[in-house]
Amino acid sequence: MTMPMNDLKPLFGDVAQEPIYIAGPCSAESREQLLEAARGVADAGVAILRAGVWKPRTKPGSFEGIGSRALDWMAEARERYGLKIITEVATPEHLELALGAGVDGVWIGARTTTNPFATQQIADALRGVDTAVIVKNPVIPDVDLWVGAIERIYNSGVRRLGAVHRGFGTQQTTPYRNAPHWSVPIELHRRLPSLTILSDPSHIGGRRDLVAQLSQQALDLGFSGLMIECHPSPDMALSDAAQQITPAALGEMLAGLQLRRAHVGDNAISDYRLHIDTIDNRIIELLAERMDVAREIGEYKLKHNMAVVQHDRYNEMLMAVEMRAEAMGLTKSFIHQIFRTIHEESVRLQIQLKEDDK
Image 1: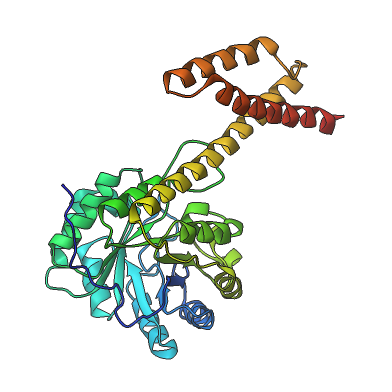
Image 2: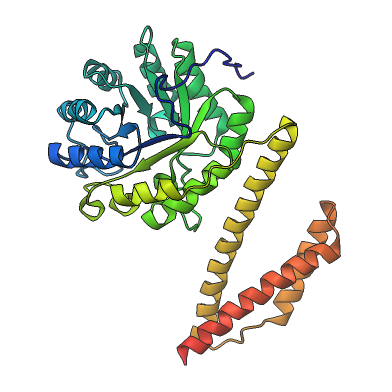
């Protein structure tokens, strides 16, 4: 049974900003780069600077961060621009060094969250410490694993505790680096309604052109704020270059976000609406994925000189989905209408491939 955690405190007590915005480079690469990023973050109206000091990378030989000396640069950025500073820790040693440098908070990354042993080691090192701790979701879409990591930190005595949704690894073709699976953080909120939950559109999208729309989507779904990767020269970044935006773009994006009025009245209907929203988002993702496959089929047909429309295949598919729909309480007419539209769009895409090949 999930703990209620009714005694949680604000992550950053004297930061009155709502939503909470955290921004900064994926990695602290040099003193000059970090200070320039910090100035841009402050100019954009963001109060909390993020930067990776130690970077857990998939392959050895990749840039794995500057290490503890970058903490001095972060401390300097805080003094110059009046920012809070936060960095990732993956071991008790990282935590000790970060706290010694006076950070205002730490986050636990997705790989660490996925490993209960590693999370528990950090939790043990946090006993008696008053700092903000943000737990990113695990690599896999497992809400129990995420809750378990949060509970470990909570049990250590931390009360300035939050979570970050940064998407989930997937082998499927999607428009995103990490599939959002919005239903997972929504379920986390249902279980822990007092927990501050932020979204990380940079890691979800993996591309800077997706950051703004994912940020708006997260706020529309009721997230408490955003963690965004921001670099003064994104294309020159030593890690995650494709998903970082400039400080100027950050300021423009934040100014353009629509902050929705909180639901008034019945909390239950708000939860239902959020559930509907996340299902609708997943439907869109699945439709985009289906059309990607339809294009691949179209390319195969074009290569092998096959007709675009295979009537027997369409009829078989329609009969199968109608039978499944009936078994799940849906009407044949409803499902027929939906799949007829989907099929028409697939045919249109494949015909377009033939036209483009002429």
